[in-house]
Structures are given as structure tokens and as C-alpha cells.
Length: 384
Image 1: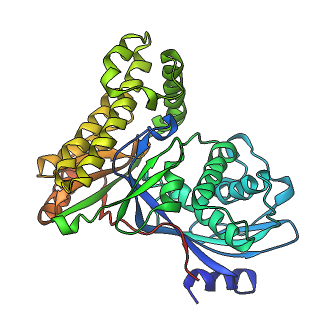
Image 2 (image 1 turned 90 degrees about the vertical axis):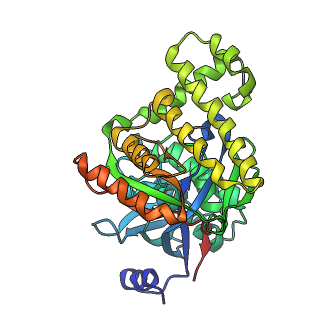
Image 3 (image 1 turned 120 degrees about the vertical axis):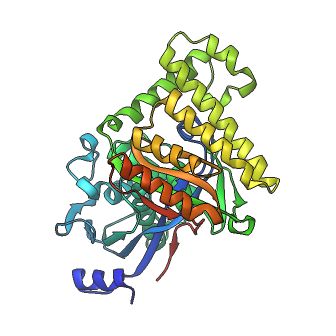
């Protein structure tokens, strides 16, 4: 019996019906494009949320986390409803929100006992919340025989985060956790959820991808995501398009000239150019030239820093120090204001680049960052 299953049995008095895992993700390119119906290119990490789960038929939902102090959270599935920021639920808002979303969509989830644990770093921009949502959704889908596809589960998990937790995220994180495959990046069109698994074997090319977790999260990020989403939507309305993905990169200058609000203009420029960068990266990967992706990562970071303005000194330092030490390219990844950067390196330079970033943080008086290789891993799956 796995550790999480044994913990479940000790907690609830019987073995679970199964154990499932869902990974966190790192996004290679395409940031703040998913809620603009654009393109993204994430890959799943080996870090996962694990859930041991059994069904109940009495309307009771019991939730427990091995990673957070406190006892079992007991809820009634019939009375689950979104609160202001779901603040009344704490960490349990993520799995409880999935149960709420499934039931709101008409699926007969009658209760469950759930025990969760996760190795996905929290607050690092690596989608620890999406991993919790997706692992819960997959377990309940299997146990209750709901027959939902992976994209359908991702959309319901996104609804849990949007409407129950109160975070207006796009669908990239949940799709990456639900649909990624080992050794590949997920080229996703967030408009219709069509996707393609793109081979991403950097080691075969003598390359590597590092994640630098700055281990900081700035309060400036509170509400900033929603503000940028609103600004992007305002830009789309002003330009008369359904979403910013409908603004061709070749027409960007003309489109920007039609916008009066400088902030909206910056947001539009970032989204349109980052969608274009995703497609340029895909072309390079399809051509077998992943090393050439590096400059596009650095270009994307400049756009996130200067146009979207979601970077921070620690992220800028990580990117700058990595590139100065010989990285092929680097950029912040995730929502920003802290969290992580992703760095493309020649494999034989990975240790030197990591050491240089660590020294730069020490010299700046920052705490040591967490640095680890990003290995394209499997998406959500049943493991027991």
C-alpha cells in the first residue's frame, strides 16, 4: 500500500478505493494568453498532488491534507456554495470546489472521503492548486463512473477555481495537469481546447530546462491578475474582436494606434506578441532546433516585465544572472510578482548557471532560490 493510502486508512479506518496523482506544470511560453483564447506551451512536472479517495453515498464530503495542519474538514455536498473568495473553506476550497462544479454540471457525486498530499511547491507559479483540482476531479470521475474526458475534467476544475475559489484563471494549468504526456510539451489552443503533444526531449539535444523558484510572493500580485484580465477584455472590445488572439501580429501596430488607454495598449501588445512567440517556438521545435528557442524566452520575459508589468526584482535577477552565466534564454513563468523562472541551458552549463543564480541571490541579500530540472512528465493518472 502506498504511503498516501496507508495514511488514508489510518485516518478514515479503511483502505481507499484508489489513489490518483496529478502534476504541477511549468509553462515554457505563452503567458496571460490563455484567458485571451490564445496559445500556450506548458509541460507537466514530476511534482504531483496525490489523492486517496473513497466514495460516500450520504452527502458527506470529508477532506484532509497531509501538508497542512488541522484535522478533517467535513462538508455537506448539498450546501456547498461559493463564498467571498471561498475564504471560509481555506485550502479545502480547491477539492470542495471541484465537487461543487461537478454537481452543478449535473453529475451525481454523493460524497467522498479524500486524503491529499502534494510535492508541488506552493506559491511558486507551478500550479499547485490546479494539481489539487485535477487529481480530485479525476478520482471522482473514475469512482462515480462519470465518463468525462480529460479536457472536460480540466474545464470543470477551472470552473472550480474561477467560480468557487474566486480566481479568474484561464484553463492552461488544468489542461496541462490533466492532458500532458511524458517527454512532451502540450501545444494548446485555449479557444477550442485542441492540443498537440510536441516531443520535448532536450537531453537528446544536449540541453536542459531549469526551474528557478525565487521563493518569494509579493502582495502586489493580489488582484493584479484580475485587473490584467479586465484590461485585456477591454482591449478586445475596443478593437472589435472576440478575444485578443484574433488580433494578427502583422496588424499589431495599427491595432495599438486605435487604443487610447496606455495601460490597455501595453497589455494588448504583450498578449499578441506572446501568442506569436508560442507559434515561433513551435516552429523551432518542429524543425528540431530547440536551442534557438532561448532568445524567444528572454524576449518573452522583457514583454512580461515591461508591457504586462508582472515581474519583480527577484525574477528579473534570476533571468539576468542566468543569461549572464551562459544560459540560452530565460523568462519568468506563471502569474508573476514572485514565483518561478524557467531557464534553457546547454546541459554541460546547467550546474554553472544554477550556481551563478544562487550567488546573485546571495549577493543581493535574497534567500536561496530553489533550482531543479524541469523534466516533461506524465499527466494525471490512477496509480493504485
